[in-house]
Image (cartoon, rainbow, N blue to C red; front, top):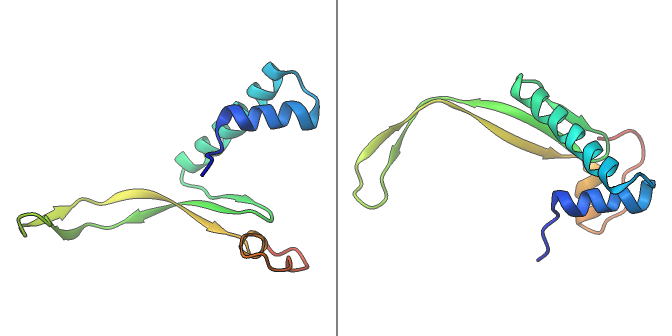
Amino acid sequence: MNTLTRASLAEAIYTQVGLSRNESAALLEAVLERMAAVLESGQAVKISAFGTFMVRQKGQRVGRNPKTGVEVPILPRKVLSFRPSQVLKARINGQPVPSGDEA
C-alpha cells in the first residue's frame, strides 16, 4: 500500500502543470492551508466530483474503559469527517461515473 504524500503531490503538480518544484510545493501548501483555515472556521470544503470535508460537533457521552469496565465521560469535541461524492464512489468501485453535476 503506497501513501500519497505532500512531496508526491508537489511532484505531480511539477510534472503535470509545469511550475517549478518550489512553486509546485508552494501552491500545494497554499491550497492545504486554505482548506485547513476554512475547516477551522467551521465551514465545509466541497471539491466537485471528489467529496466534502466537514467539521461535526460530537456531544458528551459516556464511554467505558475496555480493560477495567469503568464508565468514563467523553467530553464534547469537534471531529473532521469526509463524505465522498457519487463520482468518487463509482470510480473506487470500478463502476461507470454518473453523469451530471453530481458531487
